[in-house]
Length: 209
Ligand SMILES: C[S@@+](CC[C@H](N)C(=O)[O-])C[C@H]1O[C@@H](n2cnc3c(N)ncnc32)[C@H](O)[C@@H]1O
Image (cartoon, rainbow, N blue to C red; front, side, top):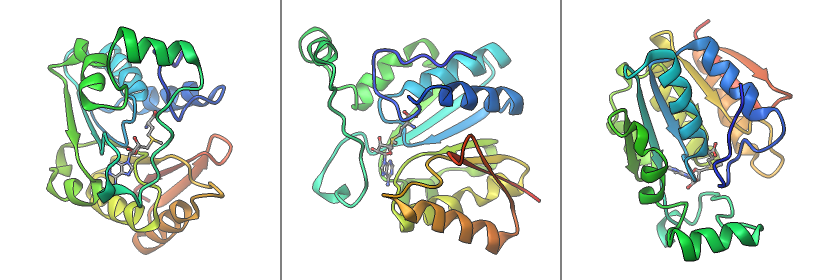
């Protein structure tokens, strides 16, 4: 399945990774999808296109992100939001006059699916506790990479797994963010869940045992 980049940045840019990810989603066929860490919305758009093909209008995509760098979220790792390609800088600065990392820009990228999409601007450490997880059947966890944040995010997603859903964590084994692996390994062990490390150690897929 082709993963499109939509002239923006994405963490699934490595050859074959986006395609692997979409095949994984297509196999699971979730109808209520949560992405923690939306960034420029590229994965969001790919997921919406796929869920539309699978379910028509009967799907829901919920996306959560800080959507801005502030002094309060300095401790979180936010990927460089600037482009190295000058054409992309010109396009967003002078043509679109838009920051691709803003909630408004992501809303625009997803406007085709506006009745199916809910975007939330905020910190997952606060917001996830307020979301009704009983409705969600698939989570792509790709937000904060700090140990405490990943630990909190996973605890909040526990209900999804208990109910038979899936949590797919990105960046399982990153040398510069070891807290991701530590939090996942602890969470899986404490709850006796099944964890498969897939796509060349890139993703940790957590389901009920
Ligand atoms: C690696 S990027 C996500 C990439 C995106 N999933 C994709 O596939 O292109 C991580 C995102 O997580 C967001 N983030 C970091 N800490 C967060 C937190 N505590 N709560 C919500 N979002 C967070 C950042 O703003 C950033 O946009």
